[in-house]
Image (cartoon, rainbow, N blue to C red; front, side, top):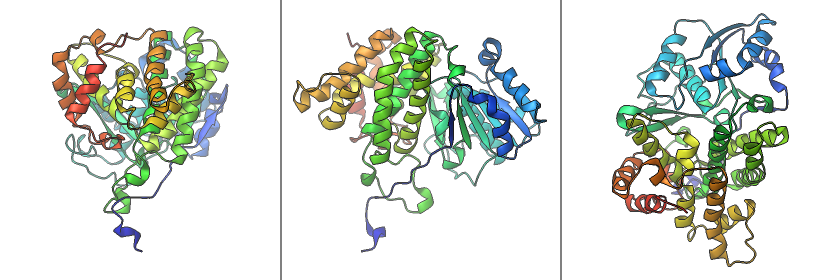
Length: 423
C-alpha cells in the first residue's frame, strides 16, 4: 500500500537540543563556544539579569579569557513586543558576530532566536509568521549557532524551535516556529536560578507544568493531517509515546519540587529538579505541541497590555488550565486521571470519570498554594469580555489544531466562563 495515500500522518520526527546540565556548568561556557567554532558572540539579555546578578560579567570574563569577543545587548523586554525585537535586530546589524547567546528567561532566548533569524535571512517581520498574522514564508535554512542559557525554570525556550512576541496594537501574542530556530546548545545551571523571587518561581513553574500537561493531552500524532510535502511537516506533531513519557516525568517532578522551590529559593535540590523538569517539559511540548490554554493566554495578556499593564506568561497560561482540564476530562479520561495521580491526588478511590476530574482540582490546589489569582475575574475580566476573548483566540491557528477536541468559539467561551472564579 502506498503510504502517501493515507489521509493522516503516522510519522514522528522527534527533535532534541543538546543539553548540558549541572551545578556550576556555566563555568564551561568558554569551552562550549569554542566547540561551535565561534569567536565573536552577540549576548542577548535583559537589564534585570545585568543589574541583579553577576551572570553576564562572569560569562564575559570566561569568554574573554579565551580571546572570544563579546558584545552585549541588554534591551530585552519582559514579554517582548515586536517593537523591542526589531530594536534588537537593528542593533545586531551594527556589530560583527558569528554566534549568538540568549541569557535570561524565555523573553531573552526568544528574542535571541528572532534576532538570529532576521539577521541571517532579512525579511519583513510578518513574513515568517503563518496566516492570519503573517505570510507563511519558509525559513530558508540553518542560522548561526545559538547558545541558550535559561535563568528561570519554566519557558522551555532553550529546547524549542519557537519564538513568541507580543503585538500590542493587535492585543495578542503570536509565535513563529521552525526547526531552524532550535538552539545549538542549552546550558542548564541551577545556580543561576536561585536569585528568582518567589513570584517568578511560581509563574515560570506553572508555565512548565502547563507545557507538560498540554503536551500530554494534545491530539495523538497519528491523527494529524498528512502534509503535502515532507518539509511542511509541523514542528508540533501531537502526543506520542516519546513526548508522553517526557511530559509525565515533568509533571511528576514539578508536583514534587515546585512548592519547595517557591518556599525556599536556596533549596538547590528543588532548584535543580525544577530547571531539569522545565527543559524536559520543553522537549515534550516542543515536539507534541501546546494548544487551548496557551492560545487563550495570548488575548488575555494582550487585553491586559491594552490596559497599560502586563501579566506574566505563566500566569496567563495557567489561569485557564483547571477549566480546560475540567471541560476536556470526559474526552481524555485516562490522561486526565494520570495528571491527577502524578500531582499527588488519590485517584484509586474514584471511578475513571471522577479521577479524571481530579486533575482540575490538583491544578487549583497548586495555584492556591502559589497565591495565584482566583480566576480571570481577579485579572479584571467580566463575563461580558468572554466572547471577544474567545474570538481573538481563534486566530492562533499555529497551535489550536493540537487540541484533543475540535476547538470552536463556544468551547472557548465555556472554558473562559469556568475560569472566571475557582474557589
